Picture 1 (cartoon, rainbow, N blue to C red):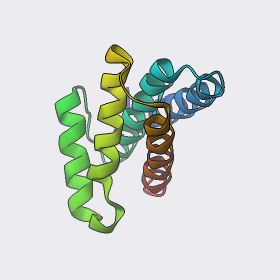
Picture 2 (picture 1 turned 180 degrees about the horizontal axis):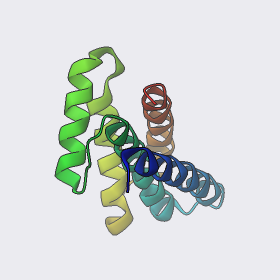
Picture 3 (picture 1 turned 60 degrees about the vertical axis):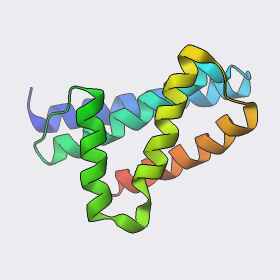
Length: 120
């Protein structure tokens, strides 16, 4: 699969997961929405990486790529947003975050995605 094909697929999945998260949030299913928001975050990072010819396959590689992007765009606070995404990923398994936290994290994830889409 070419980098361009991977990028397109990651962008499609980002959109799909974000849309599913919105539906789950409207139903107050915060654990499931949390995982979809994590997925949307991971997919947009992988799309940016694919555009640059880089393939990411692990949580660690995604985190390291976010660190690289953070160094390139420090004013975007990408590490902070990615920390929210990681908290949401944990919430899927533990369901310990409050509704208010998930809603706040959702906005941070939307901003994160918007910023990264500008690199595509």
